[in-house]
Length: 72
Ligand SMILES: [Zn+2]
Image 1 (spheres, rainbow, N blue to C red):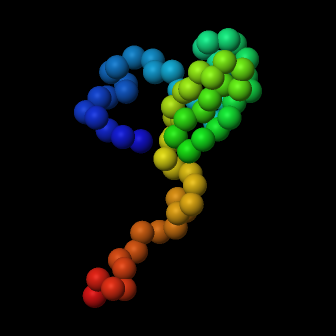
Image 2: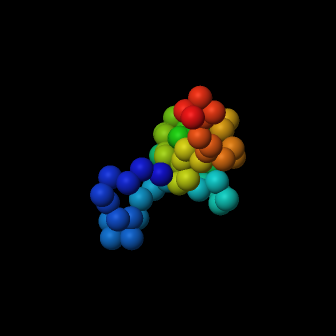
């Protein structure tokens, strides 16, 4: 997602919501989530986790970037 100069392979485990896996809340242990565009929030206790691939969904995510016709 964002590169703040940190290398995830060197910075240890980072807790995050992984859409392809069963995610248990680190706060209460339940696994019901409200998924947003950048975070997932536990439906029981409100713990919010960043999405591991955050920012790659939503409107415009699947459209190729093209140069605007007005730029020519
Ligand atoms: Zn929870």
